[in-house]
Length: 153
Image (tube, rainbow, N blue to C red; front, side, top):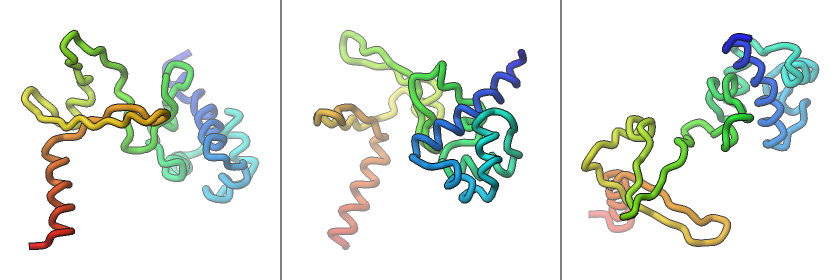
Protein backbone atom coordinates (compact mmCIF):
# COMPACT_ATOMS: atom_id res chain seq x y z
CA UNK A 1 0.00 0.00 0.00
CA UNK A 2 1.44 3.38 -0.94
CA UNK A 3 1.61 6.47 1.24
CA UNK A 4 -0.93 8.21 -1.03
CA UNK A 5 -3.41 5.36 -0.53
CA UNK A 6 -2.95 5.53 3.25
CA UNK A 7 -3.60 9.27 3.21
CA UNK A 8 -6.81 8.95 1.21
CA UNK A 9 -8.14 6.18 3.47
CA UNK A 10 -8.15 8.48 6.51
CA UNK A 11 -10.34 11.09 4.83
CA UNK A 12 -13.57 9.15 5.35
CA UNK A 13 -12.78 8.83 9.06
CA UNK A 14 -12.05 12.57 9.27
CA UNK A 15 -15.33 13.46 7.58
CA UNK A 16 -17.33 11.25 9.95
CA UNK A 17 -15.42 12.56 12.99
CA UNK A 18 -15.90 16.21 12.02
CA UNK A 19 -19.61 15.79 11.33
CA UNK A 20 -20.21 14.00 14.62
CA UNK A 21 -18.06 16.40 16.65
CA UNK A 22 -20.12 19.29 15.22
CA UNK A 23 -23.33 17.42 16.14
CA UNK A 24 -24.58 17.44 12.57
CA UNK A 25 -26.60 14.94 10.58
CA UNK A 26 -25.55 13.68 7.17
CA UNK A 27 -28.49 15.62 5.76
CA UNK A 28 -27.31 18.89 7.30
CA UNK A 29 -23.80 18.51 5.86
CA UNK A 30 -25.20 17.58 2.45
CA UNK A 31 -27.41 20.68 2.43
CA UNK A 32 -24.53 23.01 3.42
CA UNK A 33 -22.18 21.54 0.79
CA UNK A 34 -24.83 21.31 -1.92
CA UNK A 35 -24.73 17.56 -2.51
CA UNK A 36 -27.02 14.63 -1.88
CA UNK A 37 -27.27 12.82 1.43
CA UNK A 38 -26.05 9.70 -0.37
CA UNK A 39 -22.86 11.47 -1.52
CA UNK A 40 -21.94 12.42 2.05
CA UNK A 41 -22.74 8.91 3.30
CA UNK A 42 -20.50 7.38 0.60
CA UNK A 43 -17.66 9.78 1.46
CA UNK A 44 -17.89 8.86 5.14
CA UNK A 45 -17.91 5.13 4.33
CA UNK A 46 -14.87 5.55 2.05
CA UNK A 47 -16.79 4.28 -0.96
CA UNK A 48 -16.15 7.46 -2.97
CA UNK A 49 -14.10 10.64 -2.58
CA UNK A 50 -15.32 14.23 -2.95
CA UNK A 51 -13.78 16.21 -5.78
CA UNK A 52 -11.34 19.02 -5.03
CA UNK A 53 -14.07 21.69 -5.05
CA UNK A 54 -16.13 19.71 -2.53
CA UNK A 55 -13.00 19.07 -0.40
CA UNK A 56 -12.43 22.81 -0.25
CA UNK A 57 -16.10 23.40 0.64
CA UNK A 58 -15.93 20.75 3.39
CA UNK A 59 -12.72 22.19 4.83
CA UNK A 60 -14.23 25.69 4.83
CA UNK A 61 -17.46 24.42 6.38
CA UNK A 62 -15.60 22.62 9.18
CA UNK A 63 -12.98 25.42 9.51
CA UNK A 64 -10.03 23.06 9.00
CA UNK A 65 -7.19 23.00 6.51
CA UNK A 66 -7.77 20.93 3.37
CA UNK A 67 -4.48 19.16 4.13
CA UNK A 68 -5.80 18.05 7.54
CA UNK A 69 -9.10 16.97 6.01
CA UNK A 70 -7.19 14.77 3.56
CA UNK A 71 -4.18 13.62 5.57
CA UNK A 72 -4.88 13.85 9.31
CA UNK A 73 -4.49 10.47 11.00
CA UNK A 74 -6.42 10.29 14.27
CA UNK A 75 -4.90 6.89 15.07
CA UNK A 76 -1.41 8.36 15.45
CA UNK A 77 -2.21 11.80 16.87
CA UNK A 78 -2.99 12.80 20.45
CA UNK A 79 -5.08 15.80 19.37
CA UNK A 80 -8.15 15.99 17.12
CA UNK A 81 -8.07 17.92 13.86
CA UNK A 82 -7.28 21.52 14.74
CA UNK A 83 -9.30 24.44 13.38
CA UNK A 84 -7.53 26.63 10.82
CA UNK A 85 -4.85 28.77 12.42
CA UNK A 86 -4.57 26.51 15.48
CA UNK A 87 -1.58 24.25 15.89
CA UNK A 88 -0.43 21.41 18.08
CA UNK A 89 3.37 21.45 18.01
CA UNK A 90 4.00 18.50 20.32
CA UNK A 91 5.29 18.37 23.86
CA UNK A 92 8.19 20.04 25.66
CA UNK A 93 10.16 19.10 28.75
CA UNK A 94 10.83 21.58 31.52
CA UNK A 95 14.51 21.80 32.45
CA UNK A 96 15.89 22.01 35.99
CA UNK A 97 15.71 25.81 35.97
CA UNK A 98 12.26 26.00 34.35
CA UNK A 99 13.49 26.45 30.79
CA UNK A 100 11.63 24.94 27.84
CA UNK A 101 12.60 24.50 24.21
CA UNK A 102 9.92 25.70 21.80
CA UNK A 103 9.57 23.25 18.89
CA UNK A 104 11.35 24.31 15.70
CA UNK A 105 8.14 24.41 13.64
CA UNK A 106 6.59 26.86 16.14
CA UNK A 107 9.74 29.02 16.24
CA UNK A 108 9.81 29.22 12.45
CA UNK A 109 6.08 29.90 12.09
CA UNK A 110 6.16 32.72 14.67
CA UNK A 111 9.65 33.93 13.70
CA UNK A 112 11.08 33.36 17.18
CA UNK A 113 14.84 33.36 17.66
CA UNK A 114 17.35 33.68 20.47
CA UNK A 115 16.55 36.87 22.35
CA UNK A 116 12.87 36.97 21.35
CA UNK A 117 10.77 38.15 24.28
CA UNK A 118 7.56 36.35 25.24
CA UNK A 119 4.87 37.16 27.79
CA UNK A 120 3.79 34.11 29.82
CA UNK A 121 0.10 34.04 30.74
CA UNK A 122 -1.59 31.48 32.95
CA UNK A 123 -4.99 30.31 34.11
CA UNK A 124 -5.18 28.39 37.38
CA UNK A 125 -8.91 27.61 37.25
CA UNK A 126 -9.70 23.87 37.29
CA UNK A 127 -10.78 22.66 33.87
CA UNK A 128 -9.00 25.56 32.14
CA UNK A 129 -5.63 25.35 33.85
CA UNK A 130 -2.75 26.11 31.52
CA UNK A 131 -0.07 28.43 30.21
CA UNK A 132 0.06 30.53 27.07
CA UNK A 133 2.86 32.47 25.44
CA UNK A 134 2.50 35.61 23.36
CA UNK A 135 5.13 37.77 21.73
CA UNK A 136 5.97 40.69 24.01
CA UNK A 137 5.70 43.10 21.06
CA UNK A 138 2.25 41.80 20.11
CA UNK A 139 1.08 41.96 23.72
CA UNK A 140 2.38 45.50 24.23
CA UNK A 141 0.86 46.67 20.92
CA UNK A 142 -2.51 45.21 21.98
CA UNK A 143 -2.31 46.90 25.36
CA UNK A 144 -1.49 50.23 23.68
CA UNK A 145 -4.55 49.86 21.41
CA UNK A 146 -6.72 49.28 24.47
CA UNK A 147 -5.27 52.31 26.24
CA UNK A 148 -5.71 54.45 23.12
CA UNK A 149 -9.33 53.32 22.85
CA UNK A 150 -10.21 54.20 26.45
CA UNK A 151 -7.91 57.18 26.83
CA UNK A 152 -7.74 58.90 23.41
CA UNK A 153 -5.09 61.60 23.04
